[in-house]
Structures are given as C-alpha cells and as structure tokens.
Amino acid sequence: MEYLLTEQQKTIKQLARRIAEERILPVRAELDEKEEFPWAIMKDLADSDMFRVAIPEEYGGLGGGCLELCLVVEELSRVCSGIAVSYAASALGSFSLLKYGTEEQKRRYLPDIASGKRLAAFALTEATAGSDASAIRTTAERVEGGYILNGTKQFITNGGEAEIYTVIALTAKEKGARGASAFLVEKDAPGFSFGKKEKKMGIRASSTRELVFRNCFVPEENMVGREGVGFIMTMKLLDNSRPGVGAQAVGLAQGALEAAVDYARERIQFGHPIISIQAVQHMLANMATEVEAARLLVYAAARTIDSGAKNFTEEAAMAKVFASDTAMRVTTDAVQIFGGVGYMRDYPVEKMMRDAKITQIYEGSNQVLRDAIAFELRKRKAKRE
Ligand code: CAA
Image 1 (cartoon, rainbow, N blue to C red):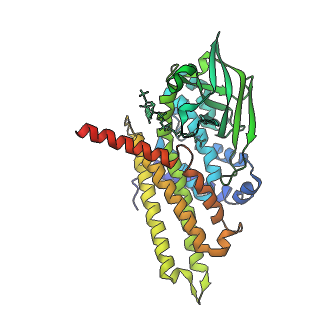
Image 2 (image 1 turned 90 degrees about the vertical axis):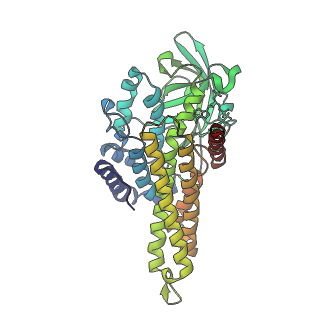
Image 3 (image 1 turned 90 degrees about the horizontal axis):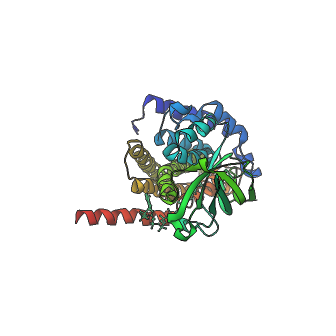
C-alpha cells in the first residue's frame, strides 16, 4: 500500500521500528509480567529524539504533527502497546501547552518534554466522571496568587512517573462543565500525591494511577487557557489525541497479524501448514484488509488535523473507533489461529489481545464516540436542510 509518506516521515517510522525491535521486543514480556514502568525504553526513545517529533522546533522539537506522532505510536505498538502508551500519554499531556499555552509556559515546559527529560500526563477522569467527563468534582479555588486544588483523579496514564500534569478542575463548580479550567501541576507541588496504582488486564508496563490533590497550591501562571474554558479545551485536545489511540490499535493489530501469518506458515496439522487451509486463509485475508483500512483512516484523520482543519471531531472519533474495534477483532483472531498455544503466555498474541481491549475504552469509549459521530451527522443534515 502507498501511504504517501514524506522521506522524513519514513525515516521517523523506520527509526521507531528499529527501537521497537531492538530494545522493546527483548523486554516486553518481562515488563508486562512484572507490571514495570519502562524507564529504560523511555530513555532510549529520548536518546533517539522520539519525544521531539510533534513539538515545534522553537521549543526543541522536530516540528512534526499528528501524523508523525501516529507513526511512532504505531511502530512501538506493533511490538508493545503497553510501552507505546507511556510515550503517547506524554504527548497528550503536552497538547494543552502546545495548543493553549502562553509563550512563557511553552518555554518553561516544552523543551524538557521534547528532550524526554520529563514525561507529561493528562488528568481528566474521576471516579464519577468517565464517559460523563463534565461530572468532574475536583475543585480549584481562587486564592491570592493562584488556586487551591482538591480532589482525586482516577486511571491517569503515566501517573506517578510523569513530572508535568495537565489537570482539569472546576473553578466555578456551580457552573459544572462550563466552570472547568486547566492547570499545569508539577509532580512535587505541595499537596499533590499519588494513590492507588491499578493492576490492569493489559498494557501492564504502563502506569495507571490515582492523583490526589489535598489543598494543593498551583500558581496562577500555571493556568492554561482562560478560566472556565477547560471543558471545551479538553474536548478539543481529545479530538487531537484520538488518532493516536487509533495508531496504537493499528500497530497492535499489525503485530498480531504478522505473528498469526508466521505461525500459520509453520504450524503443521493434517500434514500441511495450517496456512494452506482456506478457513485460515480467509481469516488472515480479513485481518490484513481490516488493518489496512484502519491504518488509512488513522492516517487520513491525522492528516486532516495537520492540515489546520478547525473541526475534526468526527474524523478523530471514526479513526479511533474503527481502528480499536479492528485491533480487538484481529488480535482475537490471531489467538484463534494460534489455537491452544495462543492462549498461553509463551506466545505474544494473548498479550496483544489483552492490550487491544483498552483501545476500545480509553480516550472516549467507542459508544460515546459513536454518539459524537452521530451528532456531527445530525448537524450536517440540519445544515443541508
Ligand atoms: N470540540 C469542541 N467543543 C465541543 C466538543 C468538541 N469535540 N465536544 C463538545 N463540545 C462542546 C459543546 O459544543 C458544548 O458547548 P456549549 O457549552 O457552548 O454548548 C460543550 O462542549 C458541552 O458539550 P456536551 O453538552 O456535548 O457535553 P456532554 O457533557 O454531553 O459530554 C461527551 C460530551 C462527548 C460525552 C464528553 O463528555 C466526552 O468526550 N466524554 C468522553 C471523555 C473522554 O474521552 N475521556 C478520556 C479521558 S483521557 C484518557 O483516557 C487518556 C489516557 O489516560 C490514556
């Protein structure tokens, strides 16, 4: 398939693939088993300038956009999406700065994120606010010189490992979502601590943790954007990041497809490699077709974003929904092709199937995102009329 990538994009993709194969492949099973954060890999990614990919040159980046980020996430996920998500979550954590930060905030934080010296994270979800993001309860009370944060964030990727957090909190709780604002909170801020570390089904090398704010003072210069626009900002940031989840899903599905083809060529049953059985061939053909379709949709959504389009809610949601559903189907079929051994931890496909599930859930469940797609369709129909 011709993806119309530039030479620079091809180079980024190849480099990410090399890191994945040389550095991630040998340790992915162990890190998954031990549920250990991949610090050594984060350092390799930093040393190879991978954190610079989607940050503007003036802040130490390489000036790429959503597509470049997706290419890296895809290649890392082809080998281990638990490790890839730690990388991707740092990018999501930097989006508030990139899109809404002041010049001073960008200069203060982006160079360290670009060099990989400090990881970033994004904190929206709470126990009462998953799909219903506007039900957050964390408050940010105005005091002299800043704000006092109180509340608990749940399921935060890179929680405890990142040093720079974008935290969404209510500056006017009586206004609900319209009273939300965004803050940059540093790991060592007084009153900021970490709670429960989740034990997960998949992406187990990543950290997913509670963030606890108890009278945590945040200086006023750490507010991102204006007071009260935090919810809309969040929605737009998630529109920017969802193709990245799609890319994670595409990488995962590609890895599972390759493993299934290799296994089907080697596995002898009834005197022949099982790839000569038409039932298996058709499964593989469907898997390959779906992976290509998902990849093209993810790249197209990323390109739409990079083109400077104003509204890309629908494209981003479609890419995330289609690619994650594809990853779930393809990884499940890969386990099926492996048969009994596919269910065992000796082979990588059971991990891929566990890892795929979360892509249908986080950064907007596929149900909520179908609502968003349908909402855009209804708007379009109204406009036609
Ligand atoms: N772009 C711009 N504006 C948007 C928008 C978008 N994509 N989506 C909504 N808005 C605006 C609406 O126009 C509306 O504006 P007005 O107040 O001016 O009318 C406002 O936001 C409120 O919109 P809704 O009434 O539609 O809001 P809602 O409360 O019904 O929720 C929702 C809408 C789409 C369900 C939203 O809550 C949502 O996206 N939920 C999913 C949350 C999510 O993705 N969580 C992921 C957490 S991050 C994560 O998982 C990262 C990780 O760690 C890996």
